[in-house]
Length: 290
Image (cartoon, rainbow, N blue to C red):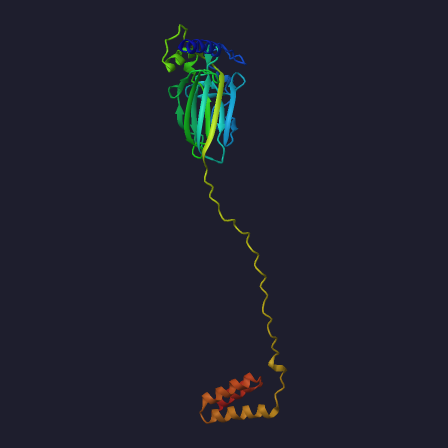
């Protein structure tokens, strides 16, 4: 059984290691020039909107946008997490195909496009190929999509042209099964400008939504209707009998003559209330005559 496993591992590893990419990866290893840069600032990057759950395969190649990073110019792809996502789990894989690979670096950005966290090549592990996957760099991490809603995948310019040797898949299988190491050559991959990337995003927690009470439209104030005022007819319209007029004139004169000024004033007020004309003159004349 061990010999069969070893033979199977050698054949499988050879097949997977030797498979060609569907799209040729550019072999040029010089970083793009400043003249080719599309975006000098993270706010200018084109961000692809992600859903709550994503499983994407894409290529970073010469048709990808070129950004200016602290580590040098690079082709890149940028993404924005779903607005529904709170905590997310992200898996980024860079496939090793033929003799080349894209050396991945990931930056998480806050709402103001400031770099909050950077995952370098040291944060990626090499995962050997099997019946379902190719040999790849892979990094799995969690992020707060509310605090860091954006992220960018690119490669440091300083890695271009360098290479990495990884264990042949057959050797990895032999170690796994505790078998004799097969006589195979470990593949070497050169870091290139582009490559095949796989991205998985899974929402672990939804972003809390704080509902706010709808603000009611202001109700128009009911028009204020002025109270209907009673029309008071002028007292001049009231006819005063001559006897009444004579009574108040005589009463005012008698009160002043008796020195009872308060009574005279009281009578004067009553006469005015009855709109008896001449009462004021009678009062003044009586006072002056005393």
